[in-house]
Image (cartoon, rainbow, N blue to C red):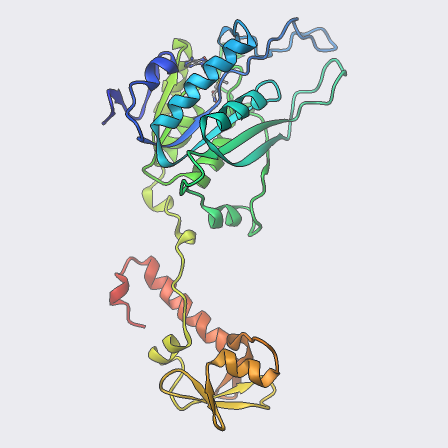
Length: 372
Ligand SMILES: C[S@@+](CC[C@H](N)C(=O)[O-])C[C@H]1O[C@@H](n2cnc3c(N)ncnc32)[C@H](O)[C@@H]1O
C-alpha cells in the first residue's frame, strides 16, 4: 500500500525534506518528531576518571548556524502540518537546547499546543563537571493541527493505566538502557535511541489502531517498531543508511499484538440508564413502593416512571429533593426498594442493569437485539 508515491509500513532512506513532499495532503493521523538537537558541543566531555562521555556529536546534529537550524525546522514542520489530517496531531521532543526554538516555529506555523509533557528520566546522565543541575528531563510538545481539530485522546485508558488517577503531564520513564539499547560491536548503535515505553504511551494515548503514524527522523526505528506492535501503520524517514539497516532489523523482530487486545473497550461509553429503563426491564415494577433509607417516606411507582405521594407526582429526583427539603437530590441514592428482608438502594439495580448491558455490549451482539 502507498501514500502518494511512498510505500507504507516502511522506513525510507533519504532526507525528510525530499521525502515529505512526496506525501499527499491530509494523509497522516499522528506525527512523532525527534529532530536534531543542534547541541553545538565544543569540547570533548570527560568523566572524573577521564573516560570519554558519548554525547551527541554526530554530523546529523550539526548546522551552520542557529538561523540555518530555524530555517530547516520551519520547512519540515510546515510539511508535517500539510500532510496531517485535519484532526491529526503532532508530538515533538527536544531538550533545552532546541525545544524553545521548535515550540516557537510550531506555533507560528499554526499548530495548536495541547500539552507540554515532561519526560522525567529516572536514570539521567550526571552533570560530570558539576557546573549545572543534572539535566534529568526532555520536553515533549503535543499539538493539534489547528485549534478546531478533534484530536484523539484516550482519556479513560490513560487514567486506567495510571491506577484510576488522571494521567499527569510528568512521565517518569528510564532512558533507553540494558537489553532494549541496540548495540553494534558493544557500542550504542544510535546515540539518541528513545525508550519504547515513551512511544508506547504516546501512541496508545493519541491514536487508534489502523492509524498512520509518520516519523520524519526515524533513527533506530523506535516509533515504527512500537507502531507496528500496536497495530498502527507507519512511515518513517532517515537519512543515514546505517540507521535504516538497524531499524529494519529491529522491525523484523516485532510481532504485532492481536487486534482484540488493542481495542479501547474502556473508552466505550455506556448509554445513560434511566429510571424508565429499570421498569422496562422488570428490575422494578409498576405499582411497587420505594422507601427513603429510614423508611420515613414511601412513594408508589407509576406506569409513566413518575412516583406519587399523596397528591404529588414527579420524578424520583424531584421527590427526593422535596422530601429532604433540598434544591436537588440524586434519586438513585435516595430511594430503596424491598427485596425479601432486605432494602436495596435503587442505584444497585442500575448497576446490575449496566453490568448486564456491558457484558452483552462487549460480546458484540448488536445493540438492538439485546434482551435483558
Ligand atoms: C534524535 S535522532 C532520532 C532518534 C529516534 N527517535 C530513535 O529513537 O532512535 C534524529 C535522527 O534524524 C536523522 N536525521 C537528521 N536530519 C535528517 C533529515 N534531514 N532527514 C532525515 N533524517 C534526518 C538523524 O540521522 C538521526 O538518526
